[in-house]
Image (cartoon, rainbow, N blue to C red; front, side, top):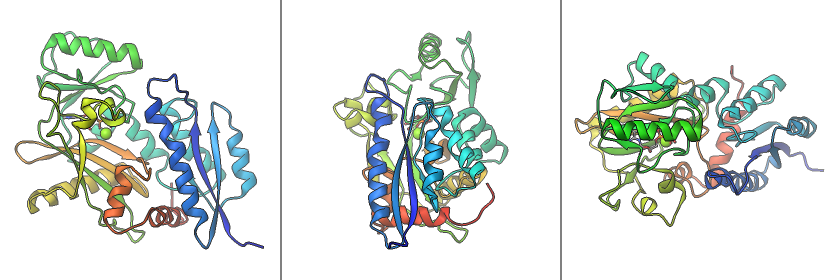
Amino acid sequence: MSKKKTIVVLYNVDYTPEQGDYAARADVEKTAHAVAAAIAASDDYSSALVAATGRQLDFIERIQMLKPASVFNLCETLDAGAGNEVFVPALLDLLRIPYTGNGVLAVSTALRKDRTKRLLESLGISTPRAKTYTSVPKAKPEFGFPAILKPNAEDGSLGISSTSVVHDLAQFKRQAKELFRTYKQPVLCEQYVEGREIIVPLLEDGVGDFEALPWSEIDFSHMPKALPRIVTYAGKWEPSSDEYRGSTTRINPTVKPALKKKIADTARGAFVALECKGYARVDMRISQAGEPYVIDVNPNCDLSPHGGFFRSCKKAGMSYADMVMKLVTLSLRTRAR
Ligand SMILES: Nc1ncnc2c1ncn2[C@@H]1O[C@H](COP(=O)(O)OP(=O)(O)O)[C@@H](O)[C@H]1O
Ligand SMILES: [Mg+2]
């Protein structure tokens, strides 16, 4: 009889094709299958896929019945709400079942862009100036224009479009109104940083440091002149769009040594500040003056076989299975959540 221990691969199925953000959400199922296959091919573990559907909590019972050594947590949402992502690590903590990636604290902090920024600022980690609005603004922000508007508690470029960068009060009001109407949550208005966009993937190495993973840069050189050089929803998820063709990813960008150190320190600082565990991705923009600014921290970032995080692992010589098993091994270490 097999002595393989079980790893549950948990993912969310709480979206429908009618949803506007279906493309961003449905990718997780494919990732779950890829992760499960990688685990099943290992000598020591077997995998069991468990789907968390709707607002049912029966996935918890199924996990308990499987008595897993660990849960590979791919849940990005529950019951179609990004804010519910945090219930998964919380429930697994309660059940004392180890799981991959980030705990309650990091996941919930990162979900609120304004809180993340306040935390980073308090530790001297650069992030663009910003103000959070709960109603349509009457005046320009004190840091002026251009500014970029985002829903305060979404990710995956939801709510980011070619009209997100605003240059005057009329555009600012119009875009804020549109975001309130669609997302029904506060709007973050952030100073727009013109410059390079560098993405730093971080994977703990299990001995107090990180794996040396190559970074990526978004190449906006093919972006039509009339469109802002940002990663919009279409740019991230709609391959037929001009924005997609205008925001490709380049791995291992050339960066001068002094800036390299600043970027690395800033990214690690952000990981530690949020008390991230296992893996995360830190998105940065580099100002014209050569200063890196954290614009986004993504604990439990996308691990799909065609996604940016794995692309960096692959460039560092890892197979998909190597990456998956590193995360499983990390999850089995005892740690305070
Ligand atoms: N302050 C900023 N300055 C310049 N571009 C920005 C700024 N904030 C966001 N962007 C652009 O918008 C994209 C999405 O913003 P981000 O904060 O990363 O949201 P999400 O959590 O949806 O990924 C970024 O990848 C970047 O291209
Ligand atoms: Mg981002």
